[in-house]
Amino acid sequence: MDNTVSIAIAIIHRDGCVLIARRRADAHLPNLWEFPGGKCLPGETPEECVVREVREEVGIEVQVVRERQTIHHCYPDRAVEIHPFDCDWVAGDARALGCAVMKWVQLEDLSEYLFPPANGPLLASFRLRGA
Image 1 (cartoon, rainbow, N blue to C red):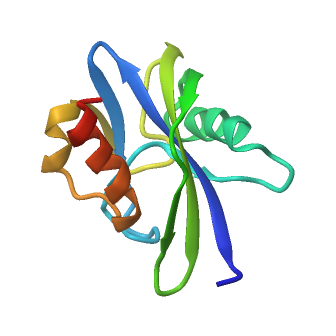
Image 2 (cartoon, one colour; image 1 turned 90 degrees about the vertical axis):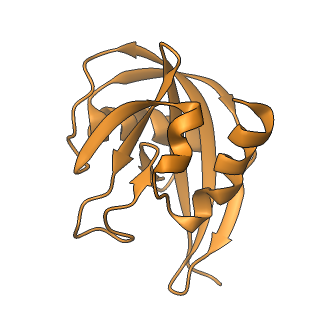
């Protein structure tokens, strides 16, 4: 599939919780929960993208701590390459700017939220490693 979309997402850690956001009703995969992030712009590295997207979507500044394993997933209409980053919250008050709603949740509670299928390997890694 030639239309692979490169996406960077942030697993933002603060006070033992991570930040998740619910996609808008008019978005691709509407109303599912996700980690803040978005599409990489031409010439932008995934690390640059994740910092920019978090600022645009939820209004906070983050520091990238490490990159997790890239996830490749095919949907019927597109393929995605997801670059997940563990990030620390640095500054700002989180607010839903580019999403319907967002919230801080404990890692062990993530299974209570419905995420896009592409996030499956990442969510499984939390269950296996406990972080």
